[in-house]
Amino acid sequence: MRKRLNDEPTTVPTTTRRLGSRGTEELRRLPEVRRVRGPRPRVLESSPVHFTEEVAAYDDMIRRYAWLLNKPFVEMLSKLNLERGRVLDLGTGPGWIPIELAKRKPGWEIWALDASADMLAEGERRARAAGVGERIHFVEGDATKLGFGAGEFDLVYSHFVLHHMDRPEVMFNEAARVTRGGGKVVIKDLLRQPNLKTRFLLWFSKYVLRYSELQMQMYEESMDAALTFAEVREALRRSKLCMAKVSAFRGLDFVVES
Image (cartoon, rainbow, N blue to C red; front, side, top):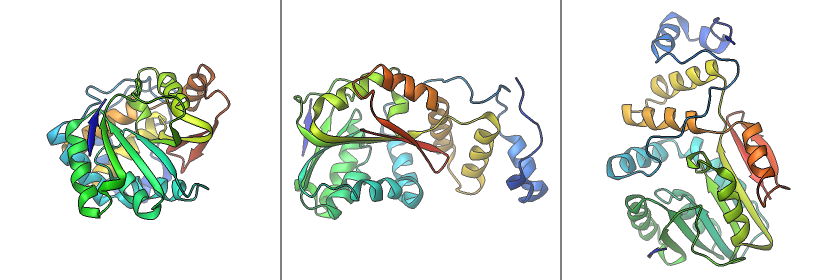
């Protein structure tokens, strides 16, 4: 049910050389980015709220690559020592993560929040089909202005949502506010990468994973909007999650745990 509430080396990396001259040439054809030391400056996405066409493209990407995008996070959350409780998903998208968690954790009641009504409609449909619709409540809302009281949840999590935020500390504060004393907050997101690594990841997504043009646009904008470790730590320092632990995940993402 839904409620509203200075230059880098120009040599091609070893991994790319192994792909041969064709792979190298295709990598070089990707849009040029300004050469700077380390990650590029952060640029927010053009439209962080996804509607019909983007919903379909995002849902297809998650469906085909759940093993890469969602499953590791589901496995992480499933290992938490919480058998029964109230759980909040910030930025649920089409609901893949809460559905998988509801299957694994019958004692969890999950509130799945997103700013896109189209994403929520897809999530509701999938939850009913999976037989877990009664334990997942799809809520339209803003992760920086939650319509819940203090301490309502045993677990608050988000996956690939923080990079949408202009001021990440605001979302950190809201997550902390609605989590009960002794509860847990887990936030996983993209880590903004150095220029050359970004180009390689774009090449890999286009020519190996075969992302569509729209999926490539969404992914590139997400990488540009992602945070560095320094930015995450600074935002945490200014928030109620100042004692949270930040760790790397597979060299591509980071995880905040409190």
